[in-house]
Length: 277
Image (cartoon, rainbow, N blue to C red; front, top):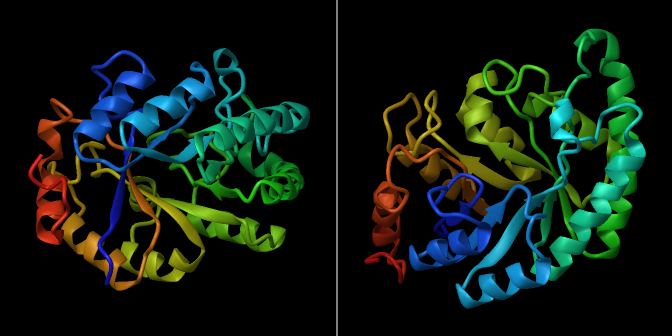
């Protein structure tokens, strides 16, 4: 069983540092060999790639642009009338992924439009999402990239988000039927929506391309107080043969580096070369 590989999510970790370059350097100094970031688009891709190389990091995940956040948008993949904007954002994400050597892009589904009834628009939004995903799969395949679908919980985090359960995401992936589209498993969201983590991990792991972790309900470090037993979950992922990255997408309860003691302990048990840092 290979040990898990962890990625620093720089949209959440090292937030005390201004700017993505400083966070990349901090992640490298803390022992990470991989990093991910939701939206790297405020920085030139070439400059980010250079800093990542200097820090000994590879970028493993970025998101498509969120759209117009001032108007409440959080992704465009399933939003009716925004197909052209989704495709423009996809092209931008692909440019960054190529420059950064990043193999995966989270294709954000987006929110149910304000004032709309979820049940009433579900069919139309799924049709739009399927159309956009088929287009995205073709674009990504040309560059040997993988697209990911992430369910986000609608109970706590984002009540309007369209894609909210692994079952819904897996059904959409099956309808699209493209091998370079996979599932992104954020254990925080999955626990809140459905629980049954052992069963769901075993069921869906064959189509999972990326994992993210945070404690429930506080969304802190895996070692922070909460209802999830992360030593068990990490062992389960190992036992099931998961080969991808585990993104640390959590809100540090204090200093980011001090809060990485859980990861240093894991690395120490695995004989990781950075365990002592």
